[in-house]
Length: 165
Figure (cartoon, rainbow, N blue to C red):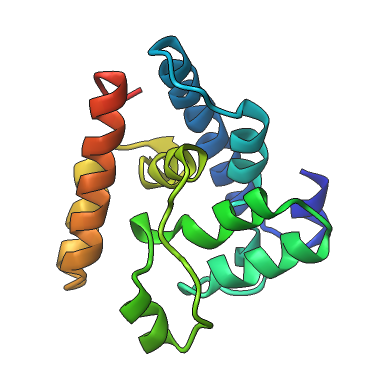
């Protein structure tokens, strides 16, 4: 929380990060109950900091900017990866190239990364919202591939836990 405030995150962004964290930890608990090994501390820290880049920008680059902030703060690489990979269910290599980003992996890979990315897609204006709302927003913007990635992420997580947390 201190890192979010020190970097100038708005109360709105902090509220969102708290809501994402709560949902991500619930999802992690559901996964643990199903026998999956998951790092709760990593999920919590990653979820709290996933939008720290919004202290500097509110465009898609906030993930890249946020990753630099947490890296500069000395946080471990798994936290940096969560922040870097949480947007839109992930950013493909071709999308990253189009955005002018350095070559890297920008799609969630680990279970912790997927849980944070998924929880982020279920929070709208600080409250839980159906995944269809996020998918619909991407579709309306013509971002069909991102909508499909979010749908697949939803299917993967709910397939593991049995239902939406």
